[in-house]
Image (cartoon, rainbow, N blue to C red; front, side, top):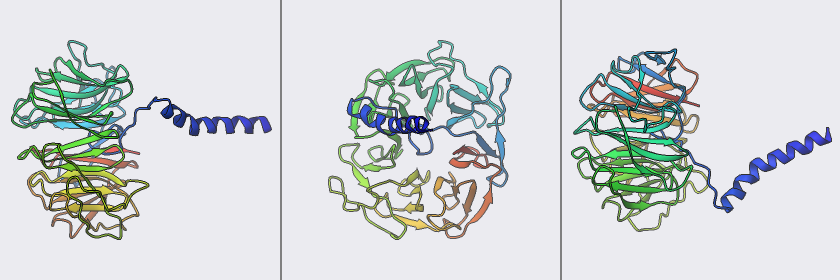
Length: 383
């Protein structure tokens, strides 16, 4: 009995101490983000609604289930900007998938050049809005993060970027709306990198001290952008990345707080021990309006992050984390928020809410609304 106890203590000691020893030695384990929408943590499947969120069904239908079983984990869903029927899915350990019937069934995408590994993790799928034949993928294969590019709609890919060290990923890609050759990427090494020529050359916009999960760019004024880090820190720039402000989150007892201008020291140390941001989105109609889903509830800013206010759901603010948020692409007063497996909906901008329990025991990690057919919605599920 004493020997068993000693063995257990040794194992626990290794679990706790070994990561610390590795960090001192300069060996880093790939850190995955908990931020929804293109993050580094896969969901456990997806639900689909074709009636604006009234009814939901699980999607796990492969066109060839015997040879191509539907992936168990989902990282990202991307909509074709012109063809409402075509949707792409980035999976965990199963490469890239495509649907040509609005997500009712799926088939695996096989790269003719075999640059895209059929067992890769695809964290992000980014289609060029101006030329949808151009597709960029943020993948993890060969023990490091890479960016792949297709110019033929996904029939073949070529590698245009790879992380400089093993076990670091690339977690987000932004393609500028009017130029398929101009893109930004967010890396696990903390870099925002930009290419103006489709990935032939790159320049550094900013190095952060931790892994990055998301980039959100104002399509009308590209110099304005947000960055979300893997631990939930939120930064904003108004000058294309020369200066950044750290936007503070709001605790439950705080209704509205300002954030300091670029270059100023952040006086709001609300979350010194643990950031609570779970999801960050920007209103697709107006970039000044943004939402945070957090362990402290649902927060909204209507002035580009200068102040934040809580929207009261039908649940106490800290009873359930708000993991996912979505705003209707044509009607910004129609808001969806998810806490656990519960879906909250407001048709008046967040004053009044209804709630439904979705047919799953998993948490809803990401909510996505089809930009061309808003009645079609997806929910990526997670633990």
